[in-house]
Image: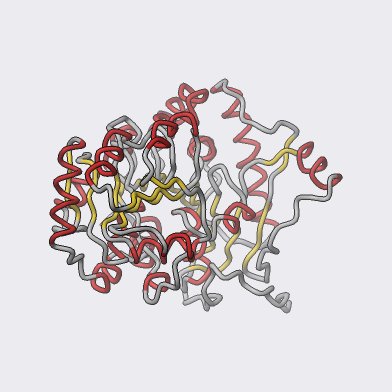
Length: 409
């Protein structure tokens, strides 16, 4: 049978793979998002990068990407209003896409109802994979509810839960915390292997099966030759102190205000989606703090590379103590000096040699001010090319593959 010709790949994807002998069939289940979301955020997050790697990896034969549950009612309403279009998926004989549908939009908060729903989800995914010719596929689940259901069904050759946040500690998922904790226990009891970005997440899940800590990484092609910055950014007075990331309660506002006051002739710039404008309201009184929201990926890369010092001023919480900050890797890929809150995951990465001496830790606003002043006097950043080579997504996901397909080292 002749495979259908592939559609044009989106900019976030590299060349289509040529499978090697013994390549595995893979099903990647997305956590809370869809193919449209991956494209909207320009392949910026961990799960997005994983799909891009699978798409080009020679260790992958057939590949099926699975969206999170979507509501038939919402989809129909959007189509009636003329919306719902998205970039076509690059379907071919070896790569396909599935969007499981249901009536309800949100997950139930009842743990038993959730598991029942995700057993149906897992059954549909497994049946579709079989119908599309995937042979003994490996499941990579990034949704903890799906991972918990899959750990109990035994439908897969092998499976793994790949986790980049402690969702049970995330404010956005507070309604589902009991259900998430229940699913962590099911993943553990079922012996499903777990790959997580921090040791704190591994401890929270407490898996009985194999476990691997796999930090975030960077995409080398993004950082070789950043483009021009937006005109408004180029016009800001220096020094430019930059934060990239979610703008909400994880930010340490006193630290940001202290740095703005200590550098009155410079600019503190915050870039990213704003989840809580009311929380950020105190920053408005500072004329040299600029909250500018989301920007296209190319602009984010360019602004990072042009900053004088990059910042990660996070409060200490259960969430931030379990995260592997993607922004730190991207700051260092741009060759920028960094000041970050002294959190356990950051110290662990530094002590393990991922960051060397390039990330400077601060425990309070005064230390942020002192560290920034020192870096402005001694502006040399890390050796970006070496850092990028050692911390590429390709290296990370090759390690994940070896763990899933070959077993723990």
